[in-house]
Length: 284
Image (tube, rainbow, N blue to C red; front, top):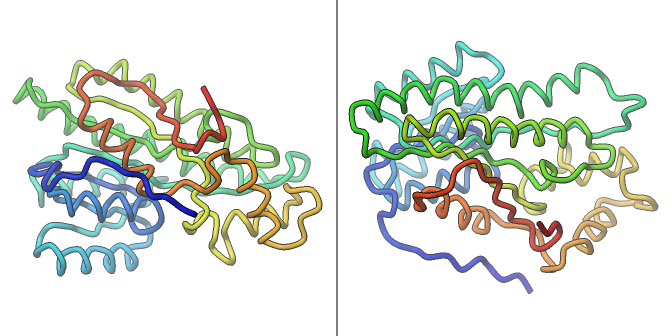
């Protein structure tokens, strides 16, 4: 039986805030964007899949009122694209209070045969793209804090449990996520003087999201093809194997991730942290 995370709900807990969710068109990012709008934020859904982002935004504006959400194209590997996204956000909404970096790609396989092209793709999106978004958003946040020193803002990377523990035949992804935590801690030290808390959330396996369950590009399919799970013959064999590794008996959900995200935004004292949300699969 699946039990949803019970989190403190309150209407308008993000009232007045502007949030940018990079990678907000699908998966965890989409779930965060939808909940942020529900809680009163004005939200930019930024994604390379602009059509999908526009669909999400149209639904949100119909449900919560026009102008609450904005879809913007961004290629996180292209600095000019990132800069345009940030500039447009400020032009439309007047500033930025929260950046959630939820963009990510996975390429799995043996180190003995892994292509440099795939390695660079994973690194460019998961690691370099995070740097580029923080670079341009932090400039806006620093200026906002200069004008109002009481203003606190948040940058949150959606990382992974693979950023805390190595992953067999998934080294490119794990390495990029380990690096992301290093960036998070380093950004936190620098940006605190600008009123910016920088933290990461490290979800466990979100089995029902596209990252795992997409029938063509999901991890279940990739891990099956990469022989990551010994003896697995089907996608269901791979899923059963990973479910068996979680003490809580189920995969992580978007609602579980939101528990950690709202904690990081609402607390005033922590920065540079990597909050693990993995059902006991990793204990620290």
